[in-house]
Length: 184
Length: 184
Image (cartoon, rainbow over all chains, first blue to last red):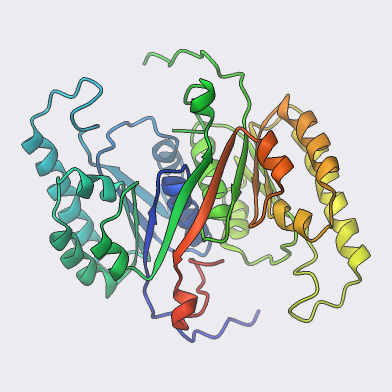
């Protein structure tokens, strides 16, 4: 079969998926799945999150080839009975960012997903400038996808593609609880 | 390990992913990946689309367990050198809907994704009422996810969860072409 012309295959993209609606992490996962279909390797580093029963983590354990996921957060900050000092959350976020930078610039990956990093920024676990610095390093090697509700203006300015997920209707409003396979 | 309480596991959801921004199909694929991680079976039926080199299709060929994808469209309607009569597109859409209904009510699947069905509705390949009728049948058995740019009001009214993907920034505007692993 004829291959597509590789006109601008070298152009790496920085993608931001933000907004209060559902579909940010799932969209990043879908991008990962699509790229994995083309035989590419994807690294997802999760900020904030530390729940090992997320469907995506179970999935990556079942199909370790292609999509690699590291849940490196320490849970939600200041809510849901969080007892970890703020510095503990900060340390975890810094470690996750450094891990993503090292792995992401290794040449092994096609795409690096920084899941919920916008939330880590919003909560001031990370500084926007240090994230931008890391993005500049990563962008030479990989496509980068950043997810999370609020994205700082500087990040949106830096990105090539930004989608905001707008919530039009949500079942939680009707009292339906989060369900396995749907929300996590 | 203790299992989560299955309070409302039986509540099936109808999810609509619409809007002009990127992330509708990818989000549906991410939902599929997540559910597959939990060991559930997912059926994706694609309307309009007929391109076998989509990353998701290659992916489902590599990992046939869990995510099953059927590309049942006949290509874009009336553009990109489309020579198929309109009735041909209509027939394909009807067939895809019937296929999804039959398979989706078999009890085998946890989730049925009707990819780009909103576009098929917009182009009048299908009638909203016939889709709603099918949804009512499917909803007893499976979670249903419908994607595509424009969703009719009746569909939004029927759905439990609706996210609109808003385009804030898109690289095509900068003249960057669609890339393998990112756009398809």
